[in-house]
Image (cartoon, rainbow, N blue to C red; front, side):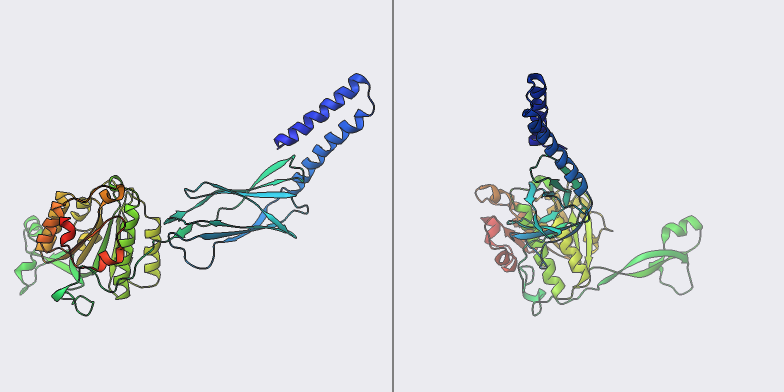
Length: 400
């Protein structure tokens, strides 16, 4: 495709040719011919260079966490016999602005290294990746599509926690909770006929009534995750970077339990409601980190609805840690009910009002959780996350 400069030269060439013919000026014919010829040469050059490229790219060997400068390295190897005189790499990286960078030529390779500065946490997919090639005078330009690479992951910046605010007194032992509860439960596998001597507690009365004979429940041992880390991705409660703080808190607490070898599950209450079990410190933890990196506040269902589902991973876990920026009476009722049934629960409350400069205020619902013996950590804008998650359970923070 001709560039604006190419169209101007082509129009000028035709204009000079018409003027030479109209006025009978022979000296103008070579000028017109030269102008038209240079446009033709540019067209041929670009068409010969318009061939696929072999692409190599990378963004460093190390992991990238939020706030890092990420170098992007792209190298193109031409397969055409004629190399383009100039080439520009164009790509869109996630939610960032379109990136345009001139490629440098080194023999038959075209390369560029540019830096994405201070990237926030997220999953950055490369879209609409292409290279624009042109002739030396940039009269003709052609766009060549390039294969789309994998996404760039920028992980949340976690803090190392040797102990947690939810561990105190008799409920902790050298930084580890004494496991007094089974890490498994029993699920109904089926029903069968009653055998002489079996306990009547196992009778399945509904099947008994339907069949007219005693039927008993056949149970199987079902392993349960020891702790569930529940991240509330409620879209309506996001103020500034409040959701990023929730993600950092969830990742830091989950990482603390993984280092201790505890079975865990990460549940993100987003629109898609994503779940990742973490039973090993290798592959499972890596997938959980990737989930946290790409987590977005798209949820529209309240947490209490998820916790009301008894078969959900969050409700089934022996211990529950909730990260939220939205407190509702129904959620507090559910958490208190869980605590009264001797199932451990803790809450990290990220105060959304503090992220828009509002003054601190009392939160009666937090005081109610505290009165029920539920450990609560309150995180506000500018707070030291590690200090909040390691500090004592809720005290003056709820009254401030």
